[in-house]
Length: 429
Image: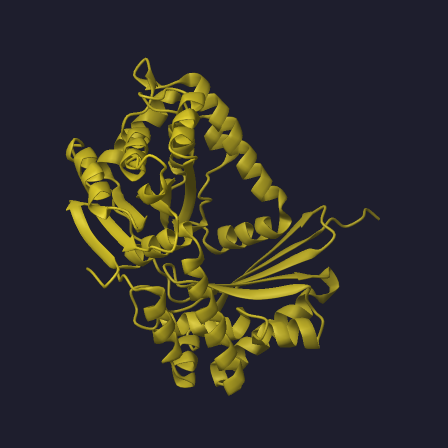
């Protein structure tokens, strides 16, 4: 696949290279992402891997030496990321390095940056045929801190619990960072097995963004994967339930919180690779994706039932989530009004301005993609995972071409599945 500035090609079976020519940045970005099935048994192992890999490689065997090498490359930055799309867990390591044309001595910074990222991923430091125990223990503590910090943020916690309750028995309900208990049980030997499986079996996506020599980057990673004996690929499929199975599932959880969190989870009836996913995204934005959305204008502003109220669409899994902050005594009223606004959306009872503002909101978000190298790289990784690579401009044009009838059609299948309420602890009588 190629457009004027985006080129994509396979390097070998299950390994792909995407380059995006972008000359407005002084830096170049290279990311290497591994696409893995999201599972309870392996989520923590995969989340820990990039953290341990970032601690050094054979040529730069500890964090001090690795950071010194990054400093030599004019302050290059290397980091990692864990995310999920549908029921896929995505493990990413990336480097951002100054463009060669800005180097005082015309050093080959891009080539050296690509080589360093390759070394970190493919040539880590081992001790007794496994990752160093001290590195593993340090990063286990760091990962546990990340998991706990996310759960201590009650807004994020409520969103996680809504998804967990709604997707009981489905991989989507698994936390992409795993669990504290699973992290504590990880050994260096288990981690190195996970690393080998990732290199040999996971789908890999290399994304380059910048004005540098993309072919040079491509050659570095072609060479790296040429040395890897690829095995039976891991199957990464997202199971889509288009309608709720059974009555609405309702859960109330009580914790020491001052503001209740109300979450509603819906089966959208539309998921990738369906043609209507753009229309479903626009429908979700009309409902609750901008300050001009139905939920914001009515549930929050007009009726003052929520401190915040927004809707999100998960196109890989075909889910819509409405999350809000409420006073507990207003939770049922808010729920009724949220469903009323959804019914209005399905009936087409929204104005041309409502639709226009939703289109503008999405178009503005697509424009913001190009504000950072990482944003561009994440966009094209997401496009690759969606199975159809489009530029932000192409998606913005597709959204603008949608009609009110398209929105109503896409919204027609949205059905309530789960209601989750996080409320304060009741005082003992």
